[in-house]
Length: 128
Image 1 (tube, rainbow, N blue to C red):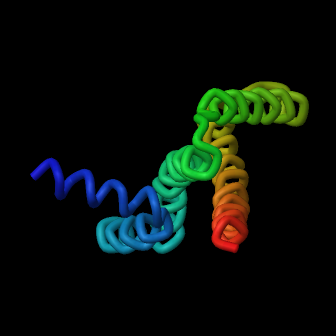
Image 2: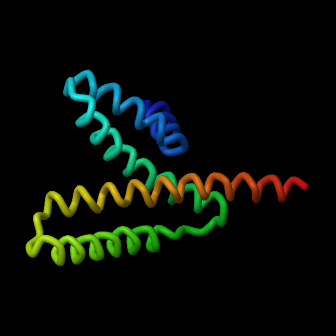
């Protein structure tokens, strides 16, 4: 049973967009609201992308840069909170957290694509 569970988790980490589609379909059926289902699926995918980026970096360079990932998430949160405070005058934490989470989605989506391409290029170079 543990083997099956770990295999399913590994698939979602390797292919986070599969997690997006599955969470979107489930959320769409439960919520009956397309917009909210997309947002929930993106939120789930953000976590999967963070884990995927960590493991891709580990596979490519055989070194963990988890500390750098955590620092970048915190830095983005801090910058976003300060900008929100400057614009609105006060901080509404749920909105700030939602904004930070969505910015992290964009960051980790870009990092995921870049690391996949980098990993493929490095493996092709190693074969030659």
